[in-house]
Amino acid sequence: MNTQKNKTYRIAILGILSAFIIIQTFVPFLGNIPIPPLNPTIIHITVIVAAFVLSTKDGMLIGLVWGLARMVKAYTLPASPLDLLLWTNPIIAVVPRVMVGLVAGLVFHAFLKRKQEKRGMVIAAVLGSLTNTLLVLGFIALFYGNEYATALNVDPSNLLKVLAGIVATNGIGEAVAAGLIAPFIATALMKVRRK
Image 1 (cartoon, rainbow, N blue to C red):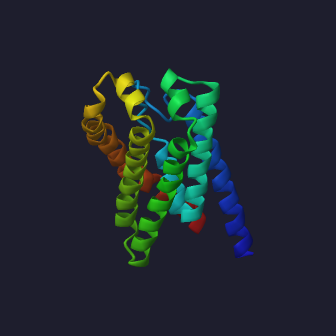
Image 2: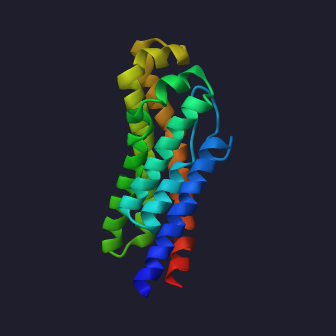
């Protein structure tokens, strides 16, 4: 009976988080703050919560949903010409999102084994968020550096400095938000499961 309850709980949470990811992706200002040419995001928090509440594998699954939803949005509702260039590439749109779930889940569960749940949530959320930022910007620089530099109106030779500035501003802000919000939501969901 307990196994059936856990299975039902898992399916329900996966469904809710997947729906939330899709809504955050397509409804303006719910998942991204549009500041062209960037879109600082809070969607990664949903992926991190899945990795905490369910499992690393489920966090990766929710990350996959996010990446695929982002690709669909790029094809159907591009916010700028860069959307079609960047976000239709699965390496940029999907891989970093799946890695958020992997990193957050592995780090959290390592801390959980040492009975440091709260600390583990904060550190895992921050690292999961930074994983997304660093991989997305790294892949953009690798595949579309010149095009991205042109869109930012900077010399391609200065692109890495500009990207470092983005990590230091948007990336750190996103990581702090994840470190504060994800543990709060995950703790509440875990309490529901334990009841």
